[in-house]
Image 1 (tube, one colour):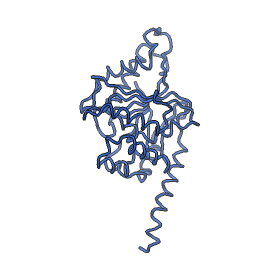
Image 2 (cartoon, one colour; image 1 turned 90 degrees about the vertical axis):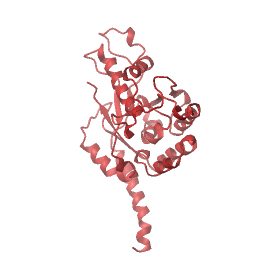
Image 3 (cartoon, one colour; image 1 turned 45 degrees about the vertical axis):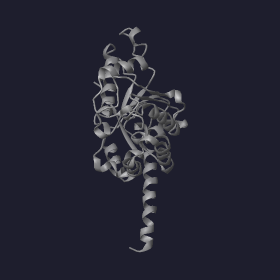
Image 4 (cartoon, rainbow, N blue to C red; image 1 turned 180 degrees about the vertical axis):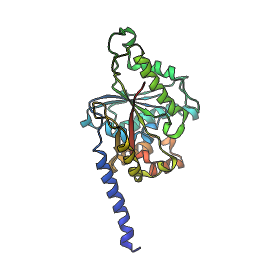
Length: 278
């Protein structure tokens, strides 16, 4: 191959990236909503949900996004450090204020390889985000102070028990919320990040054809809470996610995370589906 053939490769790559980012804008998004991002550990917000967070916190979207991190990531005794790192990271990624970040240090939700208790998580979510429920009549509509939850799916992206516990806890929260209010529409939509195969995780933006085809193949719902959602960061968004990881989460920057933030597909692309909780 001549030199100009090699020189054209980055041009084609970045052209493909720009095209993919623009195509993603044709998918619906959430606007004017109160959104809770439910994560398991500090750094989940950037390693897995960076494109989502960057998109939903854009001022023109009019959303109010909050972060609930169920553990401080204290498995190695760095819990206090990692709490500060999370706050620094999400401010880079668009969260309005440190007041919108809550990191728990609860014995029920410790950084571990154990599955967390769904009922305890549901009770926690009910207390924090549906505080009026105990006083409401079953004949009244359920009330919450959030409109949507964004979290992991049942696969947990990396199959980490703490990750998929977030999904089952969110599902239990919605079931409990609606148990006394049958017949009413649920006031909270649950969106989950799609788990993919290991080989696709390191395709970076080259995973776009597989992701877009999967999204097109899903049942579309055009409403105030649309589905599916697809967020692809441009170069500026990817740079922000890189900065959030490298400058904020310094305690976590071991060699394999350098590999992940360079080639990881979730650093630049997220697809979320809305889960119907029976």
